[in-house]
Image (cartoon, rainbow, N blue to C red; front, side, top):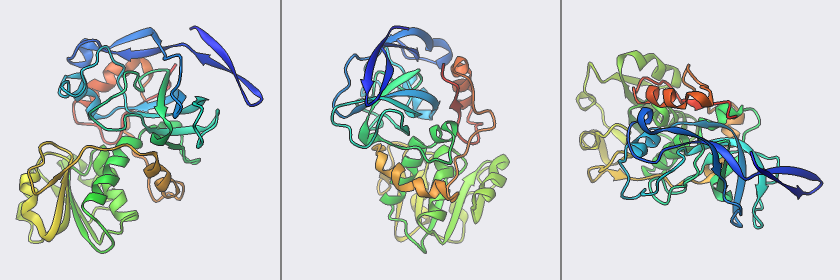
Length: 329
């Protein structure tokens, strides 16, 4: 791999000019279109607010394979492209106006600021990637890189949605799809950060015990009962499965429904995440105290060489927690 050397403070660091990376040049199934590039070019110059990151671990999200299938190609026309949103790694170079990070800092974040538009061509399924300072946070010291990589997109999505429904202490919430990557963080945040008085959540039969362990007061097996038939109503509903039209039937007067599944069905609030490192910084103490915990699928981590297999597994919807790639060569 071609490299250049640069001096930073008292140390000389090796700056790569190329990187191994998974990429696709046409839309389709990951098993059909993903290929490993041995020498993907890294932009020679960082923008003033960017950092170059040595990727230690990266996690997969459903948006990655949906994007690969071409579901967002009107907003995401660029090909070829290296996929991946979530990263945990080490800063190896900083832009001239970066203030928060120094070379050698351990960081994590979601590198795509607006979830479905202006997406980066060099994603995180790569030895190296680039991101703006504002999208990143310092890795909590008690978390491994594998754990940290599992957090950003899912946790930030969970947090933004709870802010949009104005969840606060003493309010109740129903989470539709509580066992997924975002849902499991919605539950943890509702319980430990926002102070919800009661948490109900739906999942399939095999994931009900998982919901209980997360702290759900009322786990609902959607294969056996309809949440609309519950005798009570909720201050907030977080829809992660595309049932906003049903969710509006179980909110209290003045309550709110938020959804990340388009179109959202007004009056439900549909949103696409805006990535912010400040959210991760704010939640760092909760991870360091153990109140918030990363949730990894038992298969995690999978090696860089098995990215295609990892996507195939994620697409089965059987994952219980996040699928993380590590080590990255």
